[in-house]
Length: 239
Image 1: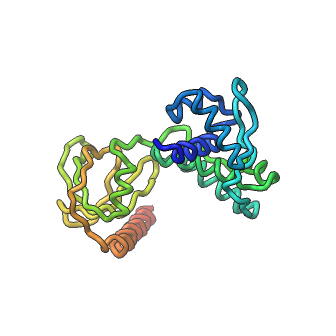
Image 2: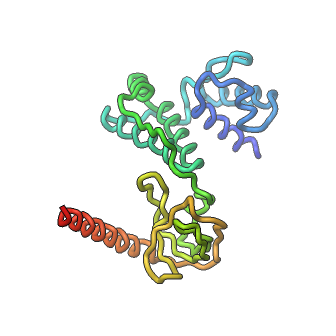
Image 3: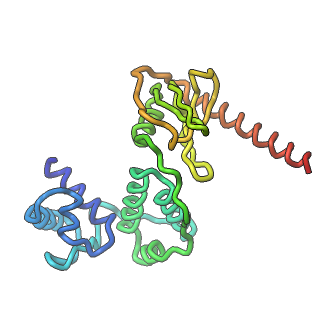
């Protein structure tokens, strides 16, 4: 890790972790020596970051010179906080950590009054049962979806029977208590939704389906909408 990347990571960690952040906590996050942490804190201060504290007491990022102030209405700020807190609850580990970092960046860039509103927001997101844990690398799946790269994986149905699938990933959606991959399944030659907690051994085939993802996804969502309306109509008829 070069020094520039290390200083950037140190700033990110100071934004993300609850203050004051001890030097040992920084060592554990960045995996460098205490001496390097002390030297890098001095370097950041020299670059204009206002960092309160010292060795033995912990550090608090007071003002981040690299981030100019942002302006949000109070309702916009509440919406951002609610959305990011929801991601920390339902997102995969990489997304949850990214949401925490985004909240820390917001805090560093907001005026003092709105920083207080961010810390003590009226709205919050809580779930008393955690979503089902994905059994694949979701970050890799997101990257494949963005790249419109064909994927292969093993998939277990509700009875536990496994099949080998090849699919074109279109979107990842959180439904009820599970993350779902919306995809075109080559086995069935049709749209399918796959639960991420039932997927195994995700691999890239090396092939792409670009640029079909953008037009395919609305078609799939429209079918889901039609099926949902038909189901609701049938329920009403049964009553």
